Length: 228
Image (cartoon, rainbow, N blue to C red):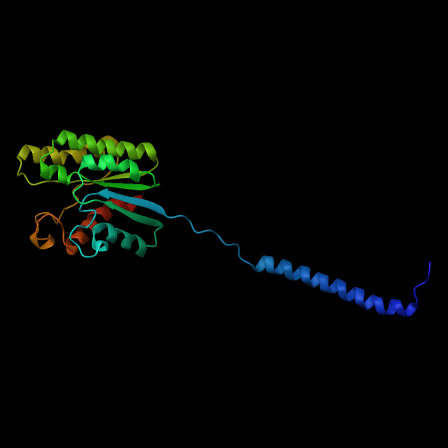
C-alpha cells in the first residue's frame, strides 16, 4: 500500500474541515427555518344558519334583497366577527304545505341553526289551522331527524281577524304550542312593531319596507343571538 505524501494531508485537512462546517451550517439553517416557520392553522369552517320562509324572508318588494331582515342578520354577524354564514331560503308565496314538500331538497346541505318562517300565507288563504300546524311540525321533524344537533327557531305570525276572531286566535296559538312541544326558540311575532304600520310597509300593506325590515331583524336578533 502506497504511503500518501505529507503535503497531500496538508491540502486535504482544510478541505475536509470546510466540508464538515458547511454541512453543519446547512443542517442548522434547515432546523432554524423549520423552527421559524409558523404552522398554519386551517380556518374553522363556518357554521350555517338557514332561514326557511316565504316572501318576508325573501325580502319581497325591495330593490336590494340584502336590505331584508335575513341580509341584515348576516351583516350583524359579520360585524361581530362570528363564524356563521346565513342562507336565505325564502320563496315568495310559499305555504306550509309547499315548505313541507321543499324541505327535503334543502336538507341535502348541512345546517347548524334552522329558522322556520312560514304560515302567513296559510292564514291569508284561510287554510285550516290544523293543517298549518301539522305541516309546520312535519318540517321541524324532518330537520331534527336529519340534523339532531341543529338548533331550531320558529318565527311566530299573527293575522288580522278578517276571517274571524276565533280563526285568528287559534292561528296565533299554533306557534306557541309548537315551541312548547319541540322545546325550541320562539320569535313571538316576527312583524312586531311593523304589522299594521303603513309607513313601515309597502303599498300592499303586507310586506315591510327597508326600514320595516330593520325592525324585523331586531325582533329576530334578540331571540337568536344567544344561540350563536
